[in-house]
Figure 1 (cartoon, rainbow, N blue to C red):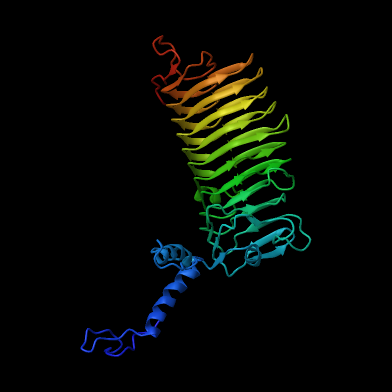
Figure 2: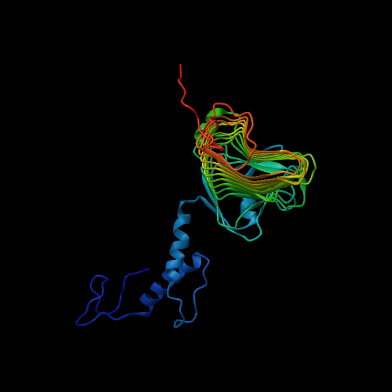
Length: 404
């Protein structure tokens, strides 16, 4: 860009004259090329018809480019993705030291994390990827990490790292057997925001989002709007395992093809709000929407099914409030329970609990219940629950208790 040099300018500025400043081709071309440079750098083809409805290309380019200014690298193809990753040991990879912020554009085909063309090297047939120095790893909507039928998982090992819209996707065909997780927490103050796992099949135990073995990592990290869907296993699968601080997370349409395999939506998790376990199914294995979870608020277990295995919307755990178990159905002689062995609960609802010749209960072996409700007739061995009043019926409420 340059200031005008046309006749009549004053110190490079336009004047109304006399004489008025003349427009020069050089000045007009500089304006044109400056604007076109911004548009084209955003990947937008400059319109060739000046009379068409294309008066917003500069605005679109600015909106595209502004969010990317915060990233050390913007990845747009597989070669660039491979280049930011370094092998540091057998099956062990991390993002190179110089990249503290990474954005992966949507390529439409995913970024390979296994097989030919991926970043795997040194003879490795599987690998895990650590964030290393990267504190912000973001993927555009639609972008995903493809395991290509290869065991692969991602490890946020950077304190204060934000995993933003990261999606790990399998091929819904190949059964993985040598690793157990998709995301494995190994740092403090990590935020998973809208991260996803889908279409991963396993012939071993699967923990798609797995908490850390270090308590401080779990206490300080959080999961916001994360989801697991369309996953399967031959042994046992858990959408979220030993995770803390979950908000609006979902496990949906997970199932087993092996008769004895179990399905868990949220397994041994803590401090949860607005989470949903839906459409989980197996045959003779067991299904749990929420197993031994504590401090659970406004969560939903819906459409859980097994042929002859047990089904629990919520089992074990404590401090459960405003939760709903709905449409738990067995087509065989199975045990189906909305809330089982939960301690200290309020405002919970068990509805449409169905089995054929088995045991069906809205609440079983629960204790310290207040303002809970079920339409099920069978609600056995619940302690510290006042059901004596005929007007209460299947409504449960704690009696007055003197604490000593």
